[in-house]
Length: 320
Image: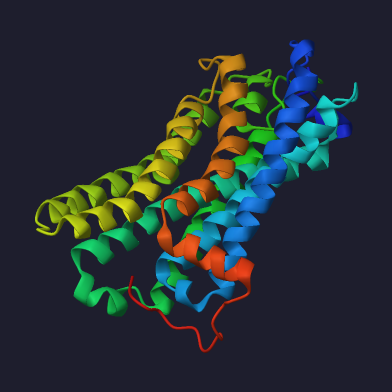
């Protein structure tokens, strides 16, 4: 049998939720509303963080990148999902599938690493407050963000071609609503143990290692918080760190389940809904979490709406 990837000659068919046709119309409306709210929420966070000089700090510099990632993450797949839910056509071109897979893997990896960078920022702010401005200088912040982007893109450059080049013997139906790595691996007509092993090793570096770093950072933060005598000081730390921990829990809880068991061991329906959750619900909730729990962002939003933003001078870090 010809081992070439026959699917490269045509389109892929995204089965999505076609086995639950009664849900498709409901999902279309719900996902469309959630997607529009995601666009508005994350765009607002980016504009506020950029336009209000009071928010020109490392924390909001990273938050701006997180919001941009969330926008890109959802846009890489949700418009295609809405198109497929709204009609009988479930196809996606091979090129479109390749782009979707590359963006999904790359942006997901960047977000894992960026959340670890944000944890380090909170660690320095709480545990080394007198040296915060020196340590978290603009050059280091830009370097950390660049490192996150570089590693995420490198991971995608390795995994995307390996996944797409798997022989499928003409089979082109993807049992998912997007071109995601576990679903594409399941389509292969050869033994995929090797690529699953490589995916697991890379997942340890991209997913688990940042998570371990985050947990260690918050271990030190909790120890520092317990030594704070002022209740108002503790409350402020819990407010800023609580938002980040909530986002970490939402994002990592789902992505670990999906990518630490990428093969046939994962439940198909459960995998679809979990992917939908961290692809639309998590990016939707992130701006709300940071807005509702943060007085600085709420104040900046109020100034933006009322047109009372202070004159923007040179950008410099100010301690928060």
